[in-house]
Image 1 (spheres, rainbow, N blue to C red):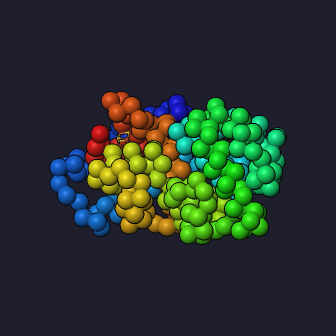
Image 2: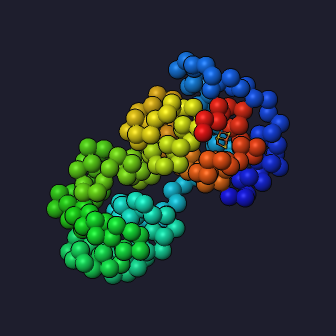
Image 3: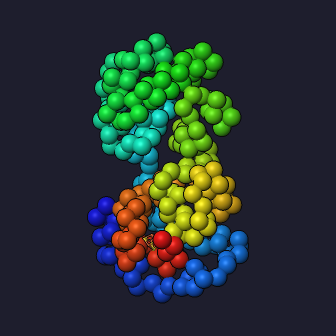
Length: 242
Ligand code: SF4
């Protein structure tokens, strides 16, 4: 966190810029203008967080599905502590499909919602085995058929595993998109996703969402009274809608 803040301070990227969107929160913005502003936000975040990636640890596609299910209402750090234990007991899709819900729940309980997560993981791995031969599918439609997999998870898989354009609207992405005025008072993940598709070039979409997470953790934090706007690389592009 501090590295990004320090970098912004050190380069003087935010405080020295002359705000060119001072009146943005008071007037409507055309789609074209918003697209241009979004393009510059994409560019700045890319510069600020060049090596962005998903913070969930995985080395196989199915493990990302497991991790993202466990990450619901849990931190990525906690998930990354639990999954090695889970895979030590159940190292394959088949092993998890055949495991009892109780055995899975026993391990994943520290992530919260243990019962439903265990049920979804077993059902998801079972469907992967029975319908997809143990291979994670590469289309939104097929991914959404898997138990416990919603659009956010499906987009993460499409982007990170298959390199396809993907907009992952997690809590950071939704918060920052609103503060930055890329969406207007919109909290519904699917509606935010649709709005961002209009603004973000497809080839930038997946990494852009990872960078929104980076920025949400490092600078534009959830503590609404104290986002670090003074050290923010997009301060002059942001209407700061708290
Ligand atoms: S609200 Fe502040 S910290 Fe967040 S993106 Fe806007 S200027 Fe940056």
